[in-house]
Figure 1 (cartoon, rainbow, N blue to C red):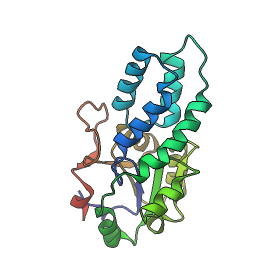
Figure 2 (cartoon, rainbow, N blue to C red):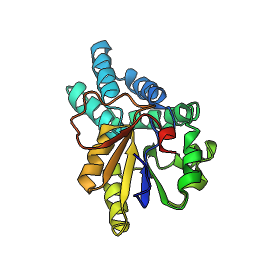
Figure 3 (cartoon, rainbow, N blue to C red):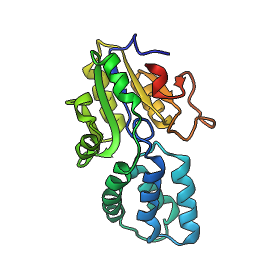
Length: 210
């Protein structure tokens, strides 16, 4: 697998460029802990770990609607707490240095970052890791959802061949939905053993693309 045939490279952030999945899971679980009893928290923890690519909005909604459905829980308060914790979670994560070598090789292509990182903090995170210049001005946090933004991105570059590069099946499903190729990078991921998604490319790490 190489990227020579593509004009537009759409990168995820968490679990791909930075090894942040465990830190973010801890932050999200800490954010819901005080709203859950022991069994509810155990249920949510498994759901969170089993679905690393889903957005915080989807996960918190699941917690409120499916796990603690018999009582009222303020989703916005959980999201507010997580927003505070998630910035620290990302900044204390490690980065794949291969991303800079990959950029050196393919800097003539259009680089886009599309991430579940909150739009209010994405520039702080990218600046911290010296990534802003690689992707600017094509930097997209959430909200709105990754799916909606991916559709707009692919439409804007409809005359060019694009690929979504990520660690998660949910991004693979987005790629399938918007009609673009998908590349799974295993290194910082939680694996693809139980995926339903089929017909995608896979590499062990970003270094293998250089």
